[in-house]
Image (cartoon, rainbow, N blue to C red; front, top):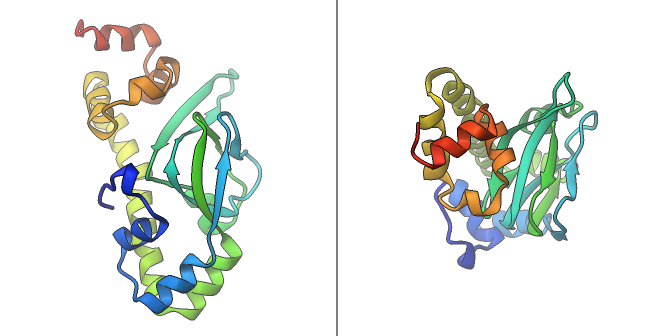
Length: 197
């Protein structure tokens, strides 16, 4: 999905950046979305519940995390500004989520319910193609690339890749959450930021 300037973001722009839909289908799709505003620390999703929504954030930040056996929160992904938010596996299969999704800034977004999306998928072939493209983009970025990064990139390269994706992330996300995402200690992150590694 191409990047969208946050100051110019619209729900229509986000949808059309994934796969172009003709106007009559686009209008019906848009009518099924709800505009929402939530405060910092609000949970969009908690473990054990199916993910019932697909969110298109227009402003804000969210983190995905789970709690390990030692009771430590492990961050697995961040969504900032004009990004899609969902637990892909839980949403697609309507099975209980393994992770939490929590807002880390006051955020604005548009939401569509799974049930409404299913109706649109059955009704419009082009929307089904749009949905396939959406899942490909989101799944590959969030899951496949994440696994590959942890397997093949060292901490310094993982940190640089995160900065390439989100240049201002250190101003918006706590260093503890970033270190957890990179699978390193906060001390190691401090050394990376200081150019000592």
